[in-house]
Image 1 (tube, rainbow, N blue to C red):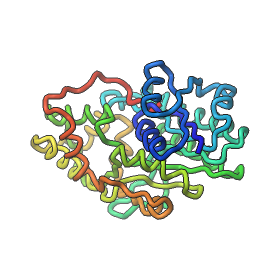
Image 2 (cartoon, one colour):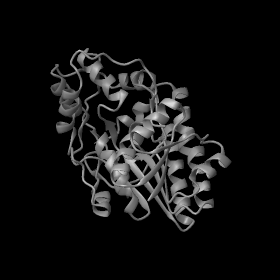
Image 3 (cartoon, rainbow, N blue to C red):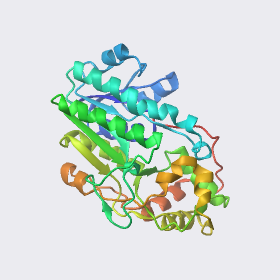
Length: 320
């Protein structure tokens, strides 16, 4: 299949691009610099220089493609998550960027559009399993509102007689992510804390498994799918698992109000209990995560990182 990826040099993009090329697909990916173009070539794909906010350029770039994959986000580092300005580009890529891609895909007769989204859009569900039929809640958050607005573009693509697919991913983790390496560094320096009781469920996905899910999504019916691992766990157990993996004591527990002080408005949804199920996607695609939970995943990450590793400079978590 001839595939165009917007965001192939980011965290999810690299994992997805690798899986697609290994499966024999002909892949073209955006690359904003020569360094990123070389990265795309090294992964076996063709780099494309295009302004994703220029409708004419985007239409020219997607011409001849059978599928478009929108994997573009730019998540800020942990230290900047409380800044609304740090999320502006991600919000724009999810909305305006998605609209332009869908317009181009419809105009050029592309048959498949895959849209990266997040499981954080679900309302708090306590200990109950969360499926794609559960209610969403933007909580008056611009970040979540942009995620849901972006998903509507995939629905618009489907309404045009094609297949629009939304992949709602759990929290990414893996050595490919600077956020992950920063978290490990913070844990080792005893800077990671547990705001509140930590009893809420969190759902995660190991980055290589997320990349294979991108490949598997090409053959599923139009619709929304959760892409998470098999065993979501409580936030306190998540932190304990990470601490055990890097061989440090459990993080200090602080009052819940410090969650917002640390993460800003983002904490309003990071603190929701979301025990997300991947059953629909597994049934539709045949995909299954190789790493079933963070209990197996964090030791893999810790083993791959040197104990003396320090946090990298605080740069945005680009998935563009």
